[in-house]
Length: 129
Image 1 (cartoon, rainbow, N blue to C red):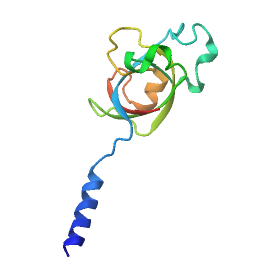
Image 2 (cartoon, helix red, strand yellow):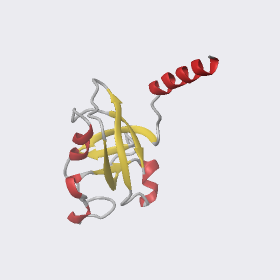
Image 3 (cartoon, one colour):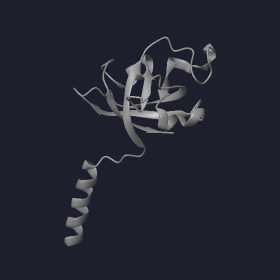
Image 4 (tube, one colour):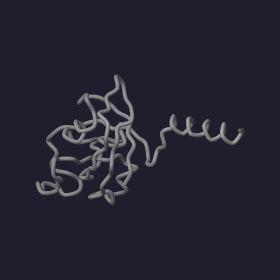
């Protein structure tokens, strides 16, 4: 009987816990002009289909080693429940234009709109490479 109670309790507890599989940070949108970028300058072909790209903060930038990296991003929270649900895959094309960067990622308008209902929001994200 004790084992049964433990199994039931454990399953209910695990249902309530959200496992984080990646890193957590913050994100906001940034708009055009997107070029020149720190990765590929004025080359228009650097942007992935759907314009799903980001600029990263100093920690992720890694002296330019971040260029071309791909991240899967999911909105997890923010003011007024901005998250749409689901995740998107983005490509790093730039470093944050200001230092220190106010967010972990600055997302293109199209990328941000794919995961947030509010274009000017600051959201909490989960991301994995």
